[in-house]
Amino acid sequence: MTKKLLMALLALSSFTAVKAQTEKGNQLLGGSIGFNTSKVSNTNYTATNTYSSTSFSDTKLTTYNIGPNYSYFVASNLDLGVSASYGYQKGTSTSIYNSQAYDSKFQNATGMLYLRKYFLYESKIGIRTGPFASFSYGRQTTNNYQPISNGYSDVTEQKNWNYSAGVGLDIVYFPAKKLGLSSAIGNLAYTHNKSRNIYYNSISNGHTNGFGFNLASSVNFSVFYVFGK
Image (cartoon, rainbow, N blue to C red; front, side):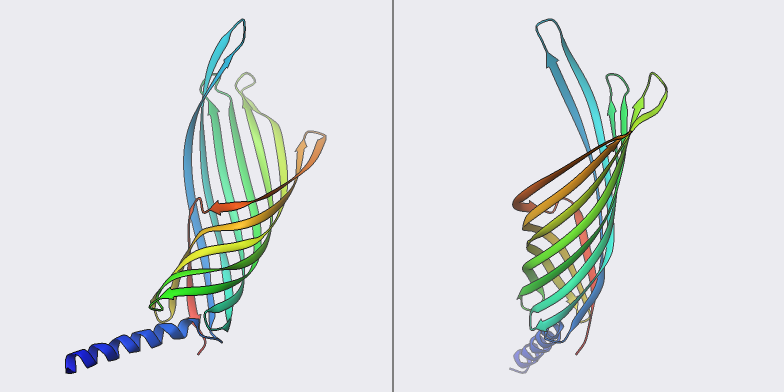
């Protein structure tokens, strides 16, 4: 009996301590970091009435992102927050057929406002979901390497303005009273993208709209500190 009572008190103590993390008035302050690398090999086959050819290419991409985030619990299990992030991507594509190469660099900055509802199992692990709105600006430069002239040429610059709104989904875990971990699963969102391409003295503008469910394509973790009551 005494053993059962002690276990019940310990469980209640643990439940109360963790529950306090998502109570009204508490705050979360932390940061996120992400990394992803990929390599894709392509085979392109071209055929006409007079000839056919096959070319091979390898594409490598490396992506990093980092940024702070802050939220305030306006009600129990409901927080309102903001986040910012900086991302950098470097890519190389090489044609095995003619040694032609493309090097690209992409940088972007993103700001986001969100409202999230927490659904936790035993107040420790679960999901959080809710509406968000974000804006990002990115700039990409691409250099085309010409083996004949033994140098880079045909520099292309692209700028992007991206607006997005929808519903996000994260997995969240509280391993300790003052510590939390989360990772993005994906989102259902509408996006509007404006782009500008600059090639020598030529400038072209474009825009795209999209709506759909987007799964997180890279490993992205957020660590945050809980403070308040």
